[in-house]
Image 1 (cartoon, one colour):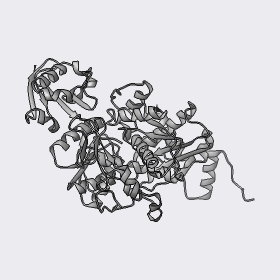
Image 2: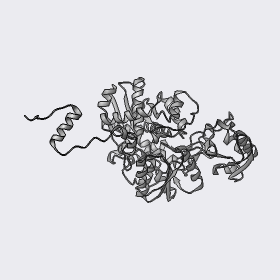
Image 3: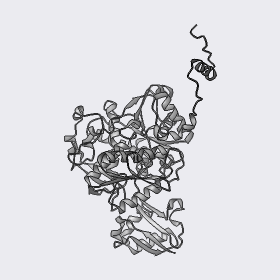
Image 4: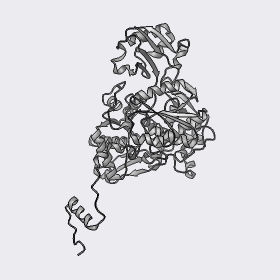
Amino acid sequence: MTTNGLYELRCRECGKTWGNVPRSFCEDCFSPLEVAYDYDSLKKIARRENLASRDFNMWRYSELLPLPEDFVGPNAVGGTPLVASRKLAAKWGLKNLYFKNDAVCFPSLSFKDRVVATALSAARRFHFTTVGCSSTGNLANAVAAQAAQQGFDACVFIPADLESAKILNTAVYGARIVRINGNYDHVNRLCAQIADRFQWGLVNVNLRPYYSEGSKTHGYEIAEQLGWTLPDNVVVPMAGGSLITKIAKAFRELVTLGWVEAKPVKFFGAQATGCSPISDGVKRNLSRFEPQKPNTIARSLAIGNPADGPFAIKQIRDSGGWAEDVSDPEIVDAIKLLAETEGIFTETAGGVTAGVTQKLIAQNRIKPDETTVVCITGNGLKTTDAIAAEFPASEAIAPRLEAFEAYLDAQLGVTVAGAKA
Amino acid sequence: MPVTIEIPTAFRRFTDGAPKVDCSAATVADALNELTSRFPDLSRHVRDDQGQIRQFLNVYLNEEDIRFLGGESCSLKEGDRVLLVPSIAGGC
């Protein structure tokens, strides 16, 4: 069931409403637009018990998304595991630690599948035939995959130096890839101009208000998987700063609808030190963040001029949370730690989030008895370059038992000759 | 210095539809002031009540965000392009 007519775009600063149009900013004050809902009407039709008969994917929350009338989700996006940590929780001294694992999101292995799913529903509604995006990689993968499935032409714009796996994971779906000599912020600016000139649906530009609503499903699922309760803490990676504000919006909506009980949730933002305009803004209590030139292996978070930075800073501060950042070596260590303890192989962004979580625990900002959810948003198979040097190939041995015994002796100092005797 | 200010579609209702405005200015601040004095209705969209460039309006000198060039006091040379881009989106 969808709720066409119960939502429209509203300016986040001046509050003016604009109906439903492919536009990301208010033409009066040029501030960002977001989707606003008629919650009083929603309360009458959006009921938690309706979910029981629905599959576990993001479309089970359709009433809470800006979908056109009669929309049917074309595939099972979302519905990812909330992994209850044992080994890492013990190591870090936490009683209730969870990893929300969008590294296994369908179809392209990142949380961007969620936002693209709602953006393409809007693209269809506005009769776009070509869709695209500015991307640090994951978004391009998601746009290319879902555009292929749904019959859109896709044209994506990426920084020229992106990881090869992320480029390949876009090209394979048949999308046109335009590599830009510049960083993501240059790509973004160009896409703002392209959206101004061409009648294309750029998912994170002129379709951004609809796109970003898809992020809420990450938050709905966390609450549902915790038995319709909210956690005490959420640790969220930040690039443009949108996801952290949308998880907060999801939690607020669930409280408004009476699906969960209200409780204070602290929001913690995670960035790489080499691109940390939002965490810097939180730590220095800036009223406006200062843009940075990114220099980090966490390229999916390398946005020096974050569109939602001011909102992310406010969300973090108002919730009583904090933001931190970690160096590139700390990111690599955290990727390995998460893999070795929880069996989750995340990309560099997940290394950032896990590394920052460790830091926040050491700072006593996250406490042992609290329930903490760490958001993992992308898959390690996409950024193998970042950790390849940590795992040099071992020497091959002959297919003989004696060779294996010699290998064990050399590697471990274990002599196994005559072990059976 | 003669420079060109590029106007996004959303602003053109304030510039009589002009996509570009040529002006003569020594700094980006001067260029913006000349633009808003020529098109006064645009003024409140460019600057906030404190006179600062609005938070969600991005200003570029050629390829670079002016915040990396020392802000709006950065100087202009002949033929420079000043770009106004509202509310850059993108990112997660």
